[in-house]
Length: 140
Image (cartoon, rainbow, N blue to C red; front, side):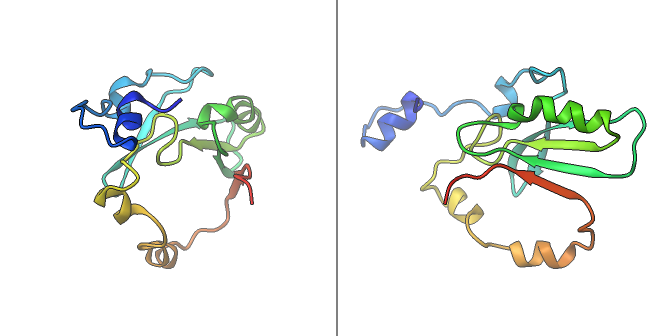
C-alpha cells in the first residue's frame, strides 16, 4: 500500500504532509532472524544490510539481493544456512525498499542516483570479483 503522503503527492494534492522519518530512525534494531540491522551510506542514502558471520569462516562471502515486493528479511533462512556452511553472508535492502532510504522518484536526489551514473568508475576501481552474488528475478 502506498504511504498516504506519497499517494497525495501522486494525486497532485497540496496537503503539506511530512515525509516519513529516516529509515534507520523507525527500523527495529534487529531483523526477524535476530541479526543486527546495519546501515551503509551510499551517495548520501542509508542502505540497510544484515550480516550473518560464521563461527568458522571459510573465506567465502555472499551478497544476497531481494526481488520485488520483499526486503533483506526474505533471505533470513538462507543467511543462516550460508553462515552454517562457513560463508560470510550479507543481505541488503535495495534503495527504495525495506528499511533503506526512499527518495521521491522524481526528485533531483533520485535522478542523481539513477541509471548508470558513476557505475563505470565504481566497477573500474574494484579489483575483487571472487565472491558470490545471489539475487531473485525482478521480472523481464
